[in-house]
Image (cartoon, rainbow, N blue to C red; front, side, top):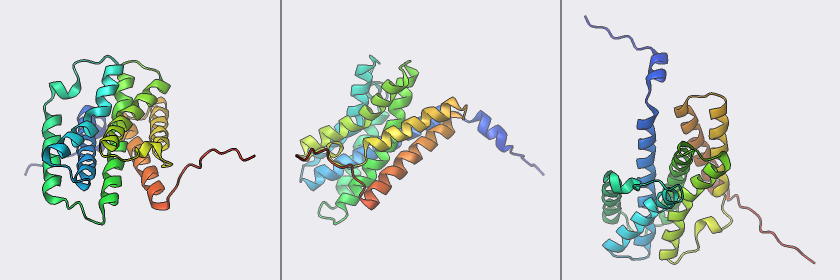
Amino acid sequence: MLTIALDPTELITTFDPRSLIYLFDMIGIIACSISGTILAKHKNFDVFGCLLVSIVTAIGGGTVRDVILDRHPLFWMVDMSYLTVITISSLAMQIFFHPNSKRVDKFLKLSDTIGLSAFTLIGIKVADSMGTNVPVALLLGVITIIVGGIIRDMICNEIPLVLQQEIYITAALTGGILYFALQNLGVADWVADISAMTTIFTLRMLAIRYDWQFPTLEWKY
């Protein structure tokens, strides 16, 4: 009789974090593609209009990040999986999503939050791998997620979410700071990755659930 003994510590030490990062990247791509399609569909865009919005939402931020870092060729030009996944997820949402659904806002914010969690981490790790310092890596992590959303909202004639009183960038920065803190403590990369993403997702969802907002600055005289 054949028996296989699995040592949990061996699984942890031999785990390849690169495969997990690629998975996170694809999760972010799908989530942002869905959020772009939902909003475009709600605005009654046609098939190609929805597809265009989903593409700029999913890869816009990463493209700007890579241009700033002078990182060539662009990731979506050498790996066609990105455009393939965007196209499939966008077409699927166009077929099965009903723009008059009462849950449009909930679906949009959920998919946007998943994208926020994944793309902030991806942006930070890419910038960190290029030798940037911590503040710049955090900034590029934020750029990775907000640029696509800003373009999406502008095309769809909406006020960009990041410019409203939402707890959005704060959640991204909190998760990014946690990531670097865990890195300095010598925590395994994949543990730091999951912890950062979970923190970002949790903060953002709590802000949506309890309507946490930043107050506006106003000088009364």
